[in-house]
Length: 326
Image (cartoon, rainbow, N blue to C red; front, side, top):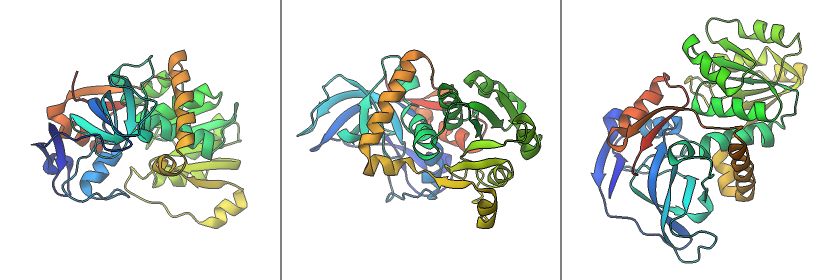
């Protein structure tokens, strides 16, 4: 089969190589999946650069979420069948075939084709856990979403609206504002142009944001601490800005807000039961039309480095999906 390898650490276009390797086999507790589509994620950029929290030995296959079809079952696997459409999340799926632990795959929602479904697992699970597990978002609360036109950000806006929250979206340009509005944001602000703390206080009549979803870090986090509501919750997802902010804890003390971290991969490892619950909830929301992955571009398998490089440049809206096979 063909697979993409990261052969050294650096920029995706420079370190990704398409290679021919032996077909994998489904080991005990695994399913063998013919991969149909892989959604590019910012962790793919960080994996290529050697900056992700998990650092596989070189060379390795990147790709962290996919949609595909089961072609073989390993010993001991129950609850799945050959020919079943599935989605999943793990490092190492940017290939034509992937052997995946059965605990890491879930039935593809019937409402989604493989292109859309490839962007369901990591992005929507991250957004779901951030809002419902970590922040305990309540209907009627103000939700501030940074990078709201990106794949995870747009998913968070959709899930916030579905939960009955009032969503304020922050995007990088006017061109991206339409994506956040289409996802359901009540207000959209442009980073670098709008005074975020002042505008958020104005929009919320001085209340502030009850929950902040922050995959950006840097100045975005600092702005959030200046407009967070009493007993508000800032959920830290990542640092796409490249700057890890430093929190002065006296600010959290005097303003009575909480900073919560979220690394979704730990739930997959330690609480797979919660991942299943979240997937069931997301499947129901997809069936109702409340959520639908936003697709920016679909590229062929041979152009996978272009997809990951585009994501690194920050110009995307929604998901960039790599179509592996029909």
